[in-house]
Amino acid sequence: MIDAETACSRVSSICQVGIVGFRDGREIFEFETLLDPCDDFHAGNIRVHGITAAHVAGKPTFGTAHPVIDGHLSGRATVAHSLFDKGALAAACRTHNRNPIETVWLDSVRVARRAWPDLPNHRLGNLARHLGVRHRHHDALSDARAAGWVIVRAIEHTGLSLADWMAPPRPAGLPPKPAADGPLRGERVAIVGEPRDGSLAHAVAAMGGVVVSSVGARTTIVAVAGNEPFGRAIRASAAFRRAEAARRTGQRLRIVSGSELAGAVSDEGGGLPTTWEQPTPPVV
Image 1 (cartoon, rainbow, N blue to C red):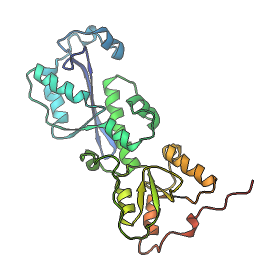
Image 2 (tube, helix red, strand yellow):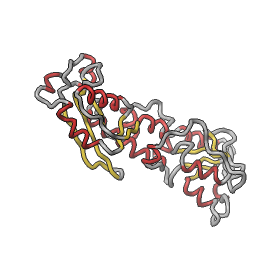
Image 3 (tube, one colour):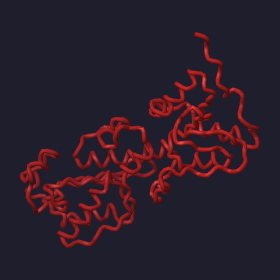
Image 4 (cartoon, rainbow, N blue to C red):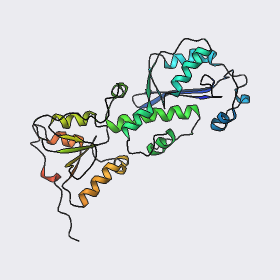
């Protein structure tokens, strides 16, 4: 995970780099350095990150630091929040006559938009607050760490692996086609906690269920990715709140975990249990 701060409007003018390494959902190393960008510092950039020419006096240039940065990133998956950092590194390599850094890039903005579509925006600061991650905006090391945790939490939240997230995104708005028959035939299933092209959606479609885009009057099941108890992020989502509101008004709607749904409709499960049925609403 990397973040770069720049001294001026030229994206090659990197004045700070932060890198945080993750493995199996945990941090394993961090690297941060100020860099002499060999360029001007503009007032607008200074207002953003607080780094001035005085701070980088005597610091290494990007050309000097390139072997260390390249050693951390080359041959690995590199996450950045937007692809500004990808462009900045490429431009700095050209400016300082260094070889391009050979890495595979993953945009954590794209991941966040798919994992938490109900959030009002997917800026790094807002995501850090939503996920409970400590964050100091426009500090390169803190930004890199926060972007890394976005990926870790998205994997936990959706059940999609890093390889799934690295794969090219499927066309939007195209949930998997339901099978002609199966234990979920006739059910309209809204998915909470992962994209509509995720593994739970494919399982539902394979069992004949129609995956719908949102909770509506014709929705019969809300399937939450993962296991119960559902976390705060799930319960606070707009889809989950709509489902609970629909149940309170008497709509026959079942809210179940993805693992419970899969187990109930397996050969051993024998179909949907009656305990999922909507209770009769109280008379008021």
